[in-house]
Length: 308
Picture 1 (cartoon, rainbow, N blue to C red):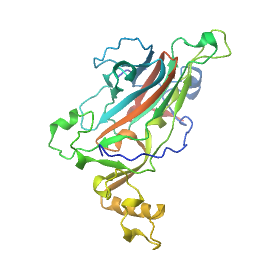
Picture 2 (picture 1 turned 135 degrees about the vertical axis):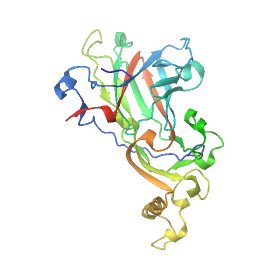
Picture 3 (picture 1 turned 180 degrees about the horizontal axis):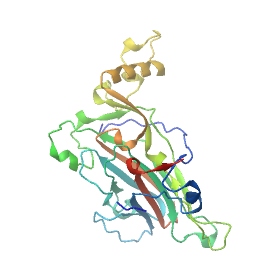
Picture 4 (picture 1 turned 30 degrees about the vertical axis):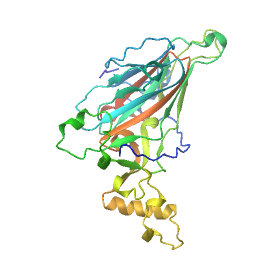
């Protein structure tokens, strides 16, 4: 650190809930943040996302703090966190995105009980400045997280898992169709059309919302019709409180509350996504248009000081 569930998952309905930056920033006084690079000060992990041309030879060796994505087009980074893991540093497990090896890049984050504040800024020379088009990059969280729990606490190997095992159906965490992220996307532009050279200060933005999730996580036993979705079709008919023969949203909610009381369902309100299960994998799509470098920093909430 520097100073400065499983196979079956429901499709989430991603609501348009994009919010602005947080009202509190870490360590630096607000006026310093606004006039400098936009990053809070304090302990953090760095991740550098490099845009590379299609003919780039990507070394898939794990390690380092960099991943490599297509300079133009879409790529994917899979973020992984395992509560049982002994990993204490941000670790790039696969630095190469689909354009170079056919699979997403993979980054493992250390377990953090309170999660992280996440900031990012776009850097490097604007690749598109010469033709007047902005160099830009947009991040989107995949609406379907993958998650599983450790059903055998005596299994020492679980801490080494970076994906849910195929035979762990009992560990399945199902998410309901109402789950949403606080931010649905975050975009960055490098080229300043007001200058001939496309240069200028690049300020970091608060992208924590791309990792903050609200919704239900349910035990696999509640998936009555085994379609991988927890919805009205799984609710027993005795919860048809108005006796109209149809389970509505209110009755689904009442059933989920009852299942929560039995320990079979949990509602998470604006939760750090990696804390909703023992092992969580979240894919983020990256749409790049000529950007050479995006720098992301993860600040542990527990050790980050705030000034409002």
